[in-house]
Image (cartoon, rainbow, N blue to C red; front, top):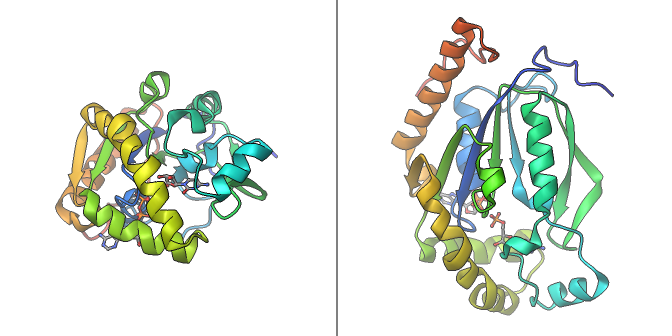
Length: 243
Ligand SMILES: Nc1ncnc2c1ncn2[C@@H]1O[C@H](COP(=O)(O)OP(=O)(O)O)[C@@H](O)[C@H]1O
Ligand SMILES: Nc1ccn([C@@H]2O[C@H](COP(=O)(O)O)[C@@H](O)[C@H]2O)c(=O)n1
């Protein structure tokens, strides 16, 4: 397959990193940004704003690590759980305007879904969201804009418990043990310190409509300004929608 699908191939997209703790609302914020840019109900080949999850870059686990993960004893919140070089290479390819293929992540089996591959066609705006998107210095340098979703820990835990039980196949004891043993300490050691690298901190996540509107306007201005100067960006919409 080639990437000549939506007229943007070869152009450098505007790459936005969206960091923040687990269940802070990173995916929801990305969805809101895409909605406001009028990009949600669009055919994926025509879409000019796409969102990728860092979870698609968890490294493959050995059989003994899988058995630890099944008991809630594997640390998925440590930087070593991710394939850093694959993240870097993939983002570099995206920035070079290449089409890339990214597997979905299966939280129930702690593995990548080789049967569910997301094809990312060259896009004007690429959102890359995850708990440690700003942790690796070489990856961090690639972003044109860095957002950090800052939602308080109690709210995040209150959202994570039902989500992990209902959507990720966990039971209450497993979720709480994993949270206390790995998620909370790793957030404090690895994720929270990356807030200082953010250009914009979004308190309360998707509830913060003012911050999201400002960010969407900024993205829109950049794309349109850049389009006028003809330096590689292509305009994405006639206007950023009703804000
Ligand atoms: N502002 C909000 N109010 C209520 N629930 C929310 C809000 N933002 C996110 N959620 C819910 O919290 C859970 C985690 O949100 P999500 O956006 O997936 O977080 P993250 O991507 O940071 O893990 C989801 O079930 C989502 O529906
Ligand atoms: N097999 C896995 C992989 C990851 N997790 C947890 O997911 C969290 C990151 O995803 P968010 O949507 O919450 O940002 C991270 O905190 C890991 O603990 C998991 O439980 N199992």
